[in-house]
Amino acid sequence: MLKDLLLALLSSTLLALSFPSFDLSFLAWFALVPLLVTATKNSLKYCFFLSLISGGGFFLIIFYWILDIAGYTLLHHAILAVFLGLYFAFFSTITSFIAKSL
Image (cartoon, rainbow, N blue to C red):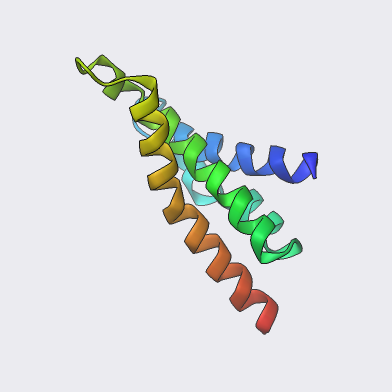
């Protein structure tokens, strides 16, 4: 369980490091591998949870600059991360469902 969570966070960190401010673009080619490996091993509910954590962590990292906007609080930042993390969650859950049904 902890290993799966760490792999999901590793995936979000690798993906965030592939963006221009860190200039490690080669990481984008395999950044989602840890997330997809954990997604195919677990139940769909747990896959959804792990992917939501991974996506939320990714968007928290890459949208750090939004915190400079006046009136934008950490609560807004967390809500944005959860909302955008749903894209990761739906993608990984659908991918896991397809992989398990093959």
